[in-house]
Length: 375
Image (tube, rainbow, N blue to C red; front, side):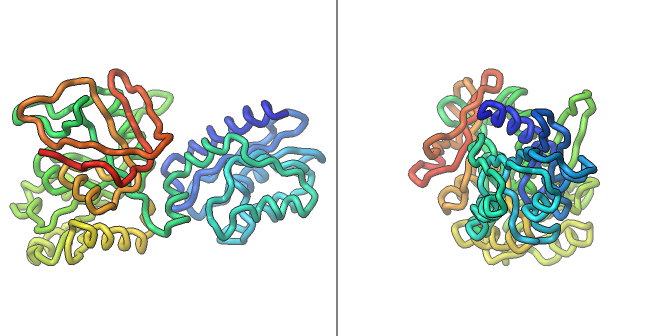
């Protein structure tokens, strides 16, 4: 039966991932109902405020589960009512389900284990910890948000094999290959927000959107929140016709400029009149700047930010102790004379490693004992 549980949980994980990046600040969850070894209903949590995966699976079944039915769910069923009603209550009210197989425990310290206790107290057989690491990893942003009460700030950078991240003038700006760049968009889709510095916006004029290809080959693009750290609003100092695309494209209202008390008031007014949001704080750098930014994100229910740089913005975030997590794309190409932005990130034990063509992705929680940047 254990092997069956593992396989079934794999399917529940597939269902949960269908809502990749769409449920913030809630978790992604998948659920199955199984009768006599056959999956008869499936569900996943599709969006914040929508029905939870267990309730979707029960509604999809459209009838009372047969006596002895099994439910498989990637995250411990909730035991409190919330906006949609406790899932434990729905499971018990449905009748027929006699065993619940759970992937990860609820990370909320106030709720962890209570769902399993409620189900056991009602006489159900509860199996916990099936593919628990995968189920927990799926919701790395939610886990941080619910336990810390603040957004997960994750740094992303690409380097040469020696750790250089800034190509010399006139060199190809792409350090990594196509597979790594495609993978960046995969993680952009997960995070509700992307952040860059004003220098990156001026130099590269990036779109900062998420682009991907569906299984049927359809090309897709959408846009999360886009943060630009610009203490003086220098990136918007010129005429509007020459503004970077993030201030003028069809998603400009998804752009938030994080600026300081030194910003020009007239430039701020022009940005806001154009539909761009401006967050003003005393400073945009150092521990004070990053703490103010994290507090504002928390107040706005933005649960995770993918900080893409450039290297100076990331170095400042690391020096301030602001980055919780890292995505380091390392290419085999050599960096020599003229290169800058030397990065040495130290990852906690168990960091994930993945080959992406000729490149490597290392990702995981960051520790405090690395040197951030060397010119």
